[in-house]
Length: 283
Image 1 (cartoon, rainbow, N blue to C red):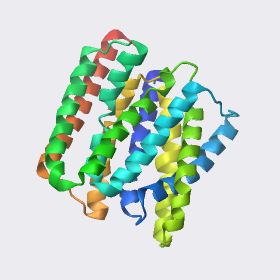
Image 2 (image 1 turned 180 degrees about the vertical axis):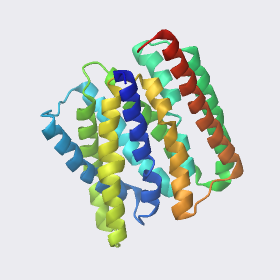
Image 3 (image 1 turned 135 degrees about the horizontal axis):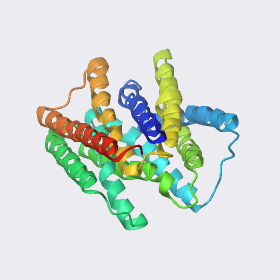
């Protein structure tokens, strides 16, 4: 397996871990800020251990802080959006990230997108628009807007490795520091601290944030941002399925069609990409 394919696998596994977020957040009867503060505080222990094992000291510079803002924004916006709209809406609207990755790549890094990338993003946008049609009755509009904004910040996460003088794992570390600092004070307003809540928080912190970001950082070392953002297409599939099974929160029929368009576009994109890589030799 080439380094490129190993990186893509890491991104895929990261997306699988991200997908449990919607369910765990729905199972915790707290505000989005309190949930995010607690889960990122736990995640800091995991990331701190990773930094110690790899003997990597967190760096600080302008671009590391830009990446940290992207990480922090993604954490907070998605967590709050999940409390204000359906999990299906939140995750698929966040999955507009590939569109913003292409836009930011052109505007800030002067990278011209490939025709395949543009076509895939166009299809993804079409699926997202179908979600908006159904979202008027399926979830709160404020939650949908915040989820869409989380797609903007999520694009910044995929672009961390392309930023000049960047250090993605440092950005993740400082992003979680900011998230925990801002969110932990909201725990003072919460009354319920049952065993199920604490278990859900532990799963969120260790796996859905900590391990997922570590895998993402490793994957981005060899996977282009657009490809990584589209490979993460497994996330909007698994997230609402898990919520539907365990939380009984269904998405509307038009939104379901939109999800199928999004996922189908991503699968087709990766199939074509794989065939192109075979035709051109090892990457």
